Image 1 (cartoon, helix red, strand yellow):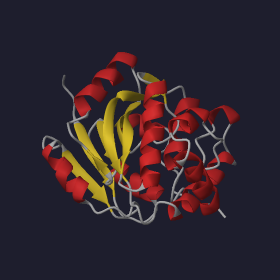
Image 2 (cartoon, rainbow, N blue to C red):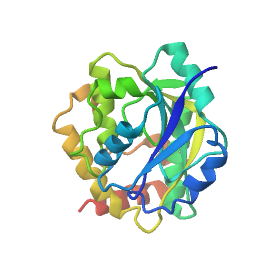
Image 3 (cartoon, rainbow, N blue to C red):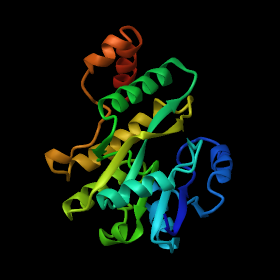
Image 4 (cartoon, one colour):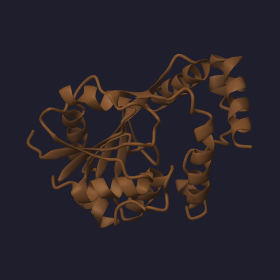
Length: 236
């Protein structure tokens, strides 16, 4: 396979040390990597998008750990389906009980969508995109400064007939800051509320006020209800 790709990593928003950004370089040594410390996730992504020159860009958040180079497999899917972007599945990593629940939620999603699915959210933590298609929809909306910027741009890509896929057979590890996990729910909810105000119902993203998932209730009858309670309390 022949392709030209650059790696783009926004920094400063996750509260996670950039350890993984450094560790990932061993897998990404064949690519030029760019980072941005601009505050506001939408603005940071736009700066990186303007900096990039290659036809393909791999978005890789600083709290994502790689155990392989994901580009060849993502590129193969992109070519096969003529997709504008293809992102990986993910597994949450952490020792705390609520991160174990989050990891189990990830596993359940992977089981439900074991192959490919059209994605509407979490599409830029680790995903390969055609740069021209991101520019075609005018890049990211900088008013999304905490969350929702990926949902918003995918919505606009779908509206223009572009295809964005998630492959749950390609998995990366998503490290989460245990100290700020619940506090960030408020910020994420702000982004999702902002997004919901302008979205068509069929493109509604995942939200922090999601209903009880009975499959999760069977898996974790004690921890999962407690997780949902903490989720609700964190939004007050």
